[in-house]
Image 1 (spheres, rainbow, N blue to C red):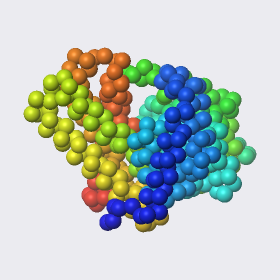
Image 2 (cartoon, one colour; image 1 turned 180 degrees about the vertical axis):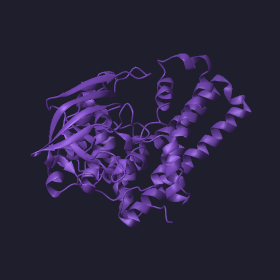
Image 3 (tube, rainbow, N blue to C red; image 1 turned 90 degrees about the horizontal axis):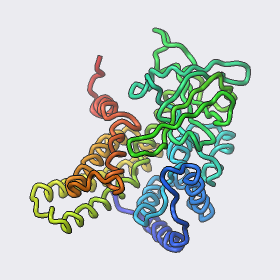
Image 4 (cartoon, rainbow, N blue to C red; image 1 turned 90 degrees about the vertical axis):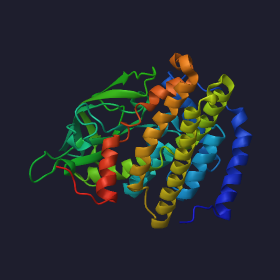
Length: 380
């Protein structure tokens, strides 16, 4: 497979680099990681700048390779990440673009691209995390609305969101209706009566997640994406983007941080440790391979005209563990300094612990790889 870039793609890269160099020095200081209203304002302001410059479309309305170049160059330049609208730009937006009606695309996509509206993700529940198909939040039809009751947990950016991509159960589980076939995908307005948001504080002290309680919340039936009880298939589209392209910029960041760790090791004398040097060398090879895998996944998506597909599970599985190994190596280099939470590497190390759980646990990814790529029989 040809992993080189065309002249047109390189021209896009050059133009993007020039634009980033001209605007990044003028950006205000980034707000505190704990101040989510301020972070929302900062992140959506950046998204508006991208939109006005003609780059707002790249997250879903652009060739996959162009999207890859965009993520690579913005990370290298130190540009703001999607931040508070991670879900809207990288999950809900691509899903609506792929599965929504023309009216739904017209209603929801432009505000996300302009930075006008922020989305959160209401998938996981206290008793349905890794086994998402076991979710219990119910929705029943009442005229032109669904009435929703239940709760969600690990709801990303719920406290600053305007909309929630919500999974609900619209058919009870039975022999006739397996648990994954009774699920529906809804777009829920976060200002609807009956919604209670309780922020959750992580090990790193941030509150980007929340528990959300739903007490007979009325959601217009027109907000359903896909058919009723077909939400599992729609969700697989969402998760293919979450696992396939959402972490691309982070691979670039990890390669940069690996270089910083090596420089710190040289400065503090730990570079003399042969085992450490071998460990860092292996990580360098690991992230180079992950980047090549990303290019392969993107090239395949561009060739077939589809989304990232199950190849995203291979990437997500290995990246999650590689990221944890990277920050374990950082702690080894820092020594006693690894206890200082004022150091960004240590906060990132705490954050990395969630990566083998978020967006589908490593065990789930292993099952997907085994069954859908290797063709192994399903476990019982």
